[in-house]
Length: 178
Image (cartoon, rainbow, N blue to C red; front, side):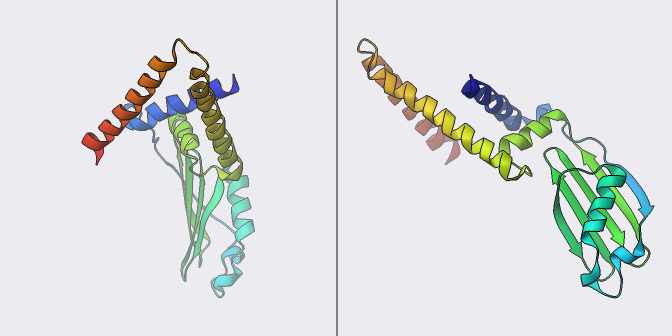
């Protein structure tokens, strides 16, 4: 039953990925403005930016979620980017004044599921779930193929259908893609 649950998830999200135009996945971004402690973005030393304090501030104050995807410091500003499945938050901080703009872009449930399907911005643990799912579905498919050899009355027709399916996939690829 576990493999059927995983199969259903990846089958449905395969359809939603293939037809993204059916779903309006992006909601309007929410923009926040504020000022934070200037000492965290010290203008005199680019290496003295308090990265952990900035990340914790945005998590605590605005509930940003997802992993820290990018942290960039240049002469006049800092950029902090958080990404997760179906979520993105981007902060631009003026290093001289401490003023910032935070743009939070939540996506709908279909976008979250699509990101989970692709493993985008999900981390190593979800990557392991995807690997486990692929291995389990491969095992189920191979066990089905193996079983056809033990069903004497259906062996020939089963192998013919297997060959026809493989040929059909090859023809679709040959004529429509390459």
